Structures are given as structure tokens and as C-alpha cells.
Length: 357
Image (cartoon, rainbow, N blue to C red; front, side):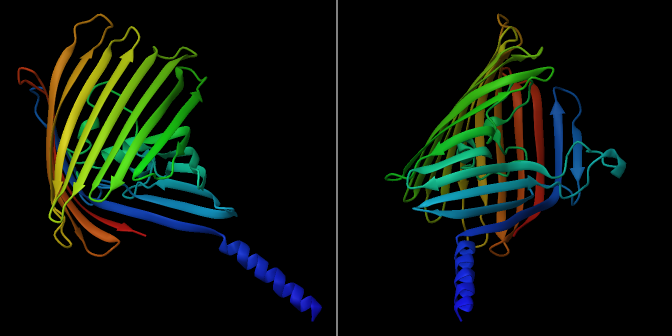
């Protein structure tokens, strides 16, 4: 009897331990049809078409694992590991893949964190505040007109990625709707033509009632290592605003970036986008429009080249269920000289199906 009670107590303790930790498998498949025409200068347009193979047009296919463990005293340990899935084809030229460079199972997220009443400390690869600010746009990212405020068309026009890698960050608890975060990245790359990279991101978010806002600021420097490129100094900030009404959700995104390269010129750009989404039951049509300016020069004392950018996109989503939806989008993005001469123009559409699990 005594041994039985001891065994039952051990089982109960094990069950309690298991109940304090959990692991969830999740994922998303995003497949569809897309077409895009790209016109450079006065040359004839170049068409790209994919039938049932436009993977990741709306959100990106992925497979992930996330878990949490209760450490007691209000402290929790968490992890996330997520890979991107190239759902429509394999990898390598041996498969007859005309886009062999699109790898399968590339890491999207890989991080550990500790959270409690003090907030959250996260280490590894994770989404940052630039992703949050840009995400206020309702546009479909990989269709012309989407991702407009960070639309890049020339070498040296880098902006902060929406994903921080080899980084550590602190996210505060919410105080009267406000949330503050600070993160840093440091990476020593000693291989040939590599860079030593260091930088930080600061952010402030607010959400209360129908109004939400997100501000992100980043500063990054990369210095030569083992014969690497010239020193690069990058400053980038973004602001996202959203106001939700019963019939319409209005959004505004603004982004500004400066990329300075020692002895190789610099790049300055700013852009804004206004959007409106109209929830109507299962349907949620939207429209976005934006404009911007780009100034760049290829030498430190060279004359700058100025261009104007503009974009629009119209689209909709239709919910088939809580986990499955259809999307459709058509749009255009253009960069032109100040005298109206075309530099690059992209126009196209996408239709797809998304399922989450």
C-alpha cells in the first residue's frame, strides 16, 4: 500500500510538471497564381507568370514549433523555431528548378525568451518593431504596390529588415497602452569580404480602443573585415498608425532611411502610404496609395540623383473559415526621374489560397 501511494504521488508530480510546459506545432501554406510585368527605362516590359506556384504572395508558408514552461513565481521560459517553406518546388538544379536559389526550410525564427512581470527578454532571431509598423499596411506584400515604404530598386538602398538576427531585445510590459522595446545586434564576420556588424533598434508602441501606433528607430554600422566593403552607416525609422471604425480601418505608414557608405556615396529615401480596409462579413476589400522620394549618389562628393516613387494596390481577402481564406490583389509601383522619365515600373496581380494549422 505504501509503495502504491508513493508511485501515485510520483505520477501526480510528473503530471504536474508536464502540465507546466507545452509545445505547439503550427504552420501556414500560402499558394496561388501571380503575374508581373517589369519595365526598366524605355525597354520593353519583361513578364513573369506562375500558375499555382506563387508561393508566399500574401503571408509566406512556414512550419514552426513554439513552447513555454512555467518556472514558478510568474517567470516563464519560451522558445520559437520556425522555418520558411518553399511550398511549390524543391531545391537544386537537379529538380529542373528555374529558381533553384529559392531554398526550402530556411530559418525564419529561432529564439529563446524569459518573460514575467518585468517584461520579456528575447535572444536569437525574432521579428522586430519595423515588422509591426510596416504591418499596419493592409496591402499584399509581394504584389506590386505592397511593401511600398521599403521598396528597394538600387544597390546600396538597404533598410532595416523586419527580422532581427543574432540579437537580444527587451520588451516592457504594457503601461496605460504603451509598450517600449530596445534591442541590439552584434556579429563579427571574419570570413573574406565579410563585415563586423553592430547596431540597435528602439521602439515605442501604443494601443488603446480603436487607435494603435508603432514607432521604430534603428541604427546600424558595418565595418570592413578581412577585406570587406567600405564602412556602412544605416539609420532607419518607421511609423505606423491605425484607426478602427465599424465600417473602415484607416492606416498610415511612413518610413525614412539614410544609408551612407564611406567613399561610395549615400542613399536617402522617404515614403508614405495611406490605406483603407472595409470589413464586410467574410469579405475585407482594401485600397492603398503611396508616394516617396529617393536621392542617391555613387561617390562621396558626386552629384545626387533624385527620383520620385509612387504605388497603389487594390485587393481583398475572403474568409472561408477561421483558418482558411482566399486573397486577390492587383497593383503597380513606379520609380521615375523628376522629369517624369521612367526608371522602373512593376505591375501585376496575385490570387491565392491560405490555410493555417
